[in-house]
Amino acid sequence: MAALRPPRLEGSIRLPDRRRLGYAEYGPSRGRPVLWFHGTPGARRQIPPAAREAAYARDVRLVSVERPGIGASTPHAYDSFRAWADDIRILADALDLERFAVVGLSGGGPYALATAHELGSRVVAAAILGGVAPAVGPEAAPGGIVGLTRYVGPMLARSRGPLGAGMQGLVQALAPVADTVTDLFLRLLPAGDRRVFADPATREMFQDDLLQGSRGGMQAMFLDAALMGRPWGFALRDVRVPVRLWFGDADNVVPLEHGEHLAKHLQGSVLRVRPDGGHLGGLGATDEIFDEILGLWPAEPAGRRGVQA
View 1 (tube, rainbow, N blue to C red):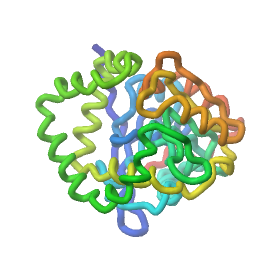
View 2 (view 1 turned 180 degrees about the vertical axis):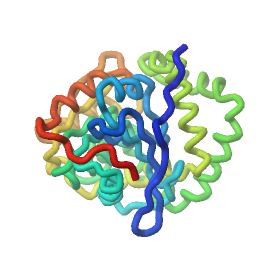
View 3 (view 1 turned 135 degrees about the vertical axis):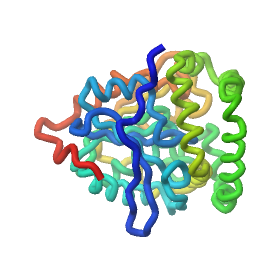
View 4 (view 1 turned 90 degrees about the horizontal axis):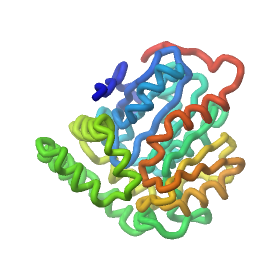
C-alpha cells in the first residue's frame, strides 16, 4: 500500500481582527494555485490521495483552507457565505496568489461560489463536487437534507459552542476504534461511496483529517449548517467565473437535482454526472477536474508564485 503523501507545509495566517485561518499546501510551491474548500465536516487535510499526487505531477499548488471553528482556524460566525471571500482575499494576498482556481467539496461548494462571485477578477475557474444548493431565497432548490437547515440553522448557530465541544470529545474518544466506526458509517452510504473508501489511503485520509482537525474544535460543521439555512448573500446568476460541477446520480446526501439546479442558475456552467456515483464520487475524478481547471487557465503567467506566508 502506497503511503499517504503528507502536506508540504501547514500553517495559518492572522486576519485583521486577530482571528487565524489555517491551511495546508500540497504540490510545488511555484505551481498554479488552486484553493480547496473541504466538506462538512472536514479540515485542511481533506485532500484525496490522488489529488495530492496529481498536484506534483500537474504543477498545481494545492492550498486547502480550513473554515472557522476547526483545526487552526478561529471560530467565527459569518453573516453569509459572501463574507468568507473577504478572508480568502487576505489569505491569497498573504500567500502571494494573484490568480487562482477554487474547488468546493459538498459543504465547501457555497464557499467556492462565494469566492468566485466576490473575487471574480482573480478566480480562473470554480469546480463544485457534490456542492449544496441554496435552501432559501428565490434561487432555492427543492428537497434534500440541506433544506432542513432553514429550520434548525438558528439553533445550531446559538449552540455551536457546546455542540462543537461535544462533537470534539466524541471524535477524540472514538479515535482508537476509527476503523470500526468508519465501517459502520459506510453502511449508510451508496455503493459508489463505498468504492471510494475501498482505497486504504482514502480511509486513512478521512480519519487523519477528522482526528487532526478536531483537536482545534469542531464548531465549523455547525457554523456551516447555520449558513446553509440563510440567504447566501449573492445570486448564483451573478457569478461570472466558469463553473464546472460534478454530481453522482446515486448521491443520497446532496441529490443530483441540486446539481441540475445549480447548473440552471450558474450562467455558462457545465454539469458532469458520474453514473452510480455517490456523494463523494467527485473525489475519484481528480484528473478530470484538473484537466478542466488547467484548460481554463489564461495563457499569460498566473501571477506571483512561490512566496510563502
